[in-house]
Image 1: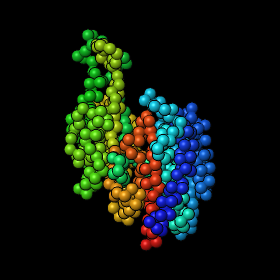
Image 2: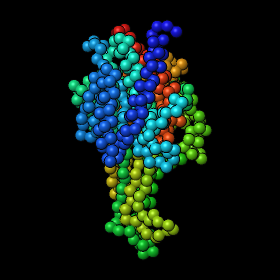
Image 3: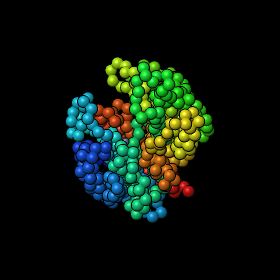
Image 4: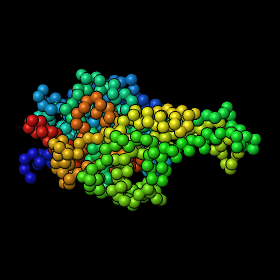
Length: 457
Ligand SMILES: [Zn+2]
C-alpha cells in the first residue's frame, strides 16, 4: 500500500490515542439536554467541543440560542472550494435505566470498545467525522469543512432553525452530511436517504360536567370513551393499519422496486426484529412488506386513551370526558399541515363535539439515493468498510434534518456509523474502534469525493 491510502492508514493509527482521549472526555460530560439539572454540563460540553476543534487547528465558536448553544467550527481552505457541513449532536439521552452495568458517565475503554452514554449517539461519530475532516484538510483536499454540533437534538431541536439564521457563524453550505443513524446489521453498512415525518394530535370529547353512575344515567348518558373508540375505528383499520381518512394517501410517493431492493440489502431479518422488540406477532412477516411499512408508508397510531376509571376492578361510572393521544408518521410527499386539515375535517364529520389539537409537526424527508452525491457516499463507504452500503430509509424523524432541508435546500446525505448492538437510547451504550476507524476512512474519502465532484462541474 502506497500513496494517499497508506498515509490515511498511518494517520488513523496515529490519531487513535487522541480520538480515545477526546471521546473519553466527552462521554464523561453528562450532557443530558432533557434534564434542566444538567444545564452546566451542557455549557461545559460546548466549551470543551470548541477547545477540541481549536486544538486540531480548526476555527470554532459557540453560537448562542434561546436554549442550549450550537457549536460551529471547521476549516476554510479556499473561497472557490465547495463547503460541506457535517451535522452531529453532542447532547445525550438520560441514563437512568437500572440495567447499566457501569456508571453511564464514566468512560471505560476495553479492547477497542468505548463504553458510556453518548459514545455511539452521537459523540463517537462526531469525533470520527472530525478526525476524517482533519486528515482531508491536512492533505490539501480543496474543500471547506464545517462541523455543526447541536446540543438539543434529543429534545427535538427547538432552537436549531434560529441558530442556522446566524449566517456569519453558520454559513449555508453546498451540501450536508449527517452522521447520526444506525446500520441494520453489523458488517452491512446502511445509509438512510429518507425519514418519516410526524403529526401528533389530541382528540378530546367532553359530554358532561362530571362522571355519573351508570345505574342512574346509563342508557341516556353519552359515553365519550366509546365515542372516541368509534372515531378511531372510522380513522383506521386496526388490523391492517390502513388509514381511512379520505385523501390521506393522495400525496404518498410509494417506494420503487429498486428502493425496496436496497432496503432488503441492509441485512434486515424479521425474526431478529421481533426478538429485538419483544413482539409476539406482527401485521406482516414478509421482509419487503415489513420494511415498506416501517420506512416508507404512513401510519395512524393510538398512543393513549385517557378518561374514566383506571383503578382495580370495575367502577360503573359513565365518564364525562375522554382524550385520545394519536400520531401519524408521514412519508414523502405528505405535508403535516395538510394532513392535519384532513384529520380535522374528517373528525368534524364523524363527531361534531370532538376537538382536535395538533401536538407537533415534522416534515418527512426524502434525499438522494442515486446521482453523484449518493455515488460519493457509496464509494466512501466502500473505501471505509470494504462493502457497498445499502440505501435505506428510517421510520423516525430527525427534526434538524427537516430544518436544514427547508432553510438551505441543498443535498443532505447520511453517513451513519452506529450499530444496532451499540445500545442507542438504551442502557450499556458503547461505540467501537472498528466503526470509528472505518468511519474516519469513509469520511476522509467522502471529503475527497466531494472536492472532485465540484471540480468536475
Ligand atoms: Zn442521535
